[in-house]
Length: 272
Image: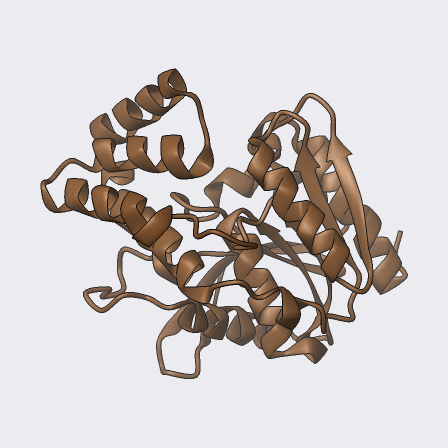
């Protein structure tokens, strides 16, 4: 079923709500609407209430002629956490969704019982968009020229760190898929928003709730470096590495991702 909640600015937060039991609020990665986490949700739903937020930035029904900010995304997370009710909620954030989770925990610590953060691209030094935002500039130029596939090729090659052949495949897929073409500008602006946050490690050092830092041993090295920085920063971190997986374990190994989330849920909720 669909659950909605009013955010502080009057816009409507929206999520898929399934299952029953201790709540897990999922914040999906870029170029998505939460669908990519459906397999993980299906494995959790028999014993957990799984709420997959459709992140504000990726809502095609919302006017985004003015850029969506991280703060606005956090407003939707907080509204949904309040709508779920029943006390602090466990977060599961993936990629940029994991950065939104971190920011939500900073904004409202008492609203969250803990979090599983799957490879957040948190800024820990140089910007994601390269010196002077040069990667963002080229990607935005491609969007302006009506070439979202090229924009995504630039993004996944020069920011994500995929090899050239893989970036070509991603670009082609985006170019020929209408839904992906529509979401591509949001992905580029998502990356810009991550850089706009800057280095937030000092703020994250105040997060007291338990956090699992999830990664794959086949992911680009810089994502592991960002997890290293968070592990050094957070007061109560633990690290889980998924052998043989990269940045898409939620799709390729949903049982394993669900097990990590269920383990933390059992700890913070006292549930089996």
